[in-house]
Amino acid sequence: MGDRIKNGLKEQGVDTQILPDRQWAALSDNIKIFCITTIIQDAILMAR
Image 1: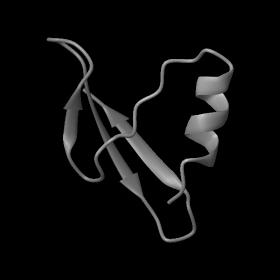
Image 2: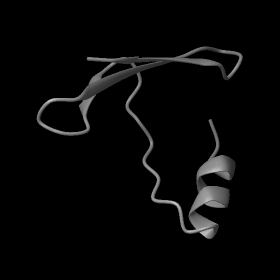
Image 3: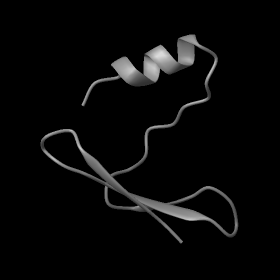
Image 4: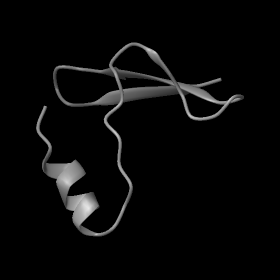
């Protein structure tokens, strides 16, 4: 959607990253996350 939330967090010094939709993203060698967004700007976040 927009970058409003990301930009607001960055202004406060928070390191941010936009996750790819419906793809596994590695946070480390042992932790991966999967984000599914919906049309109403809701989301599901899975971890393995």
